[in-house]
Length: 130
Image 1 (cartoon, one colour):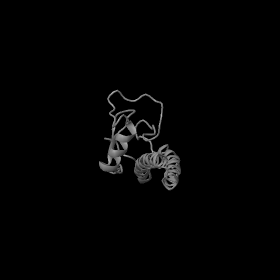
Image 2 (image 1 turned 90 degrees about the vertical axis):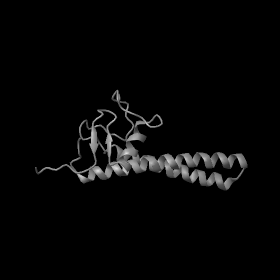
Image 3 (image 1 turned 30 degrees about the horizontal axis):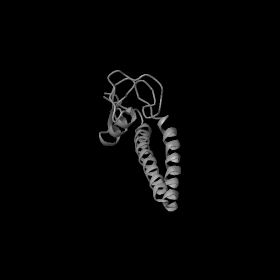
Image 4 (image 1 turned 60 degrees about the vertical axis):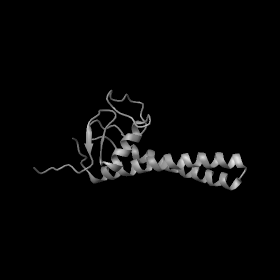
């Protein structure tokens, strides 16, 4: 099991994972609010949905910036960023998304399997002294 060498990298993984889910929730809520506002002809709901959409877009940009710096310690590929690299044949998904599974594992289990090299990484600092 691999471990990151710096505490900063661990914080980046957590922040990128939380931002990924917040972005997903905000954009989904914005879609529902705007659709409901258009159906019942309520401009207030549409404005709230538009505000949630702009917040979700801001979080998506912020998540992209943070996720590009959160790299797997072994293969150095950004785990929570959208890459067109081929995934490992044994990599698993959650609802069809590799990043959803990785981010849930980072948040709740404090470890993850890289979807590109399929190596486990534990989010604890690496011990240099033996």
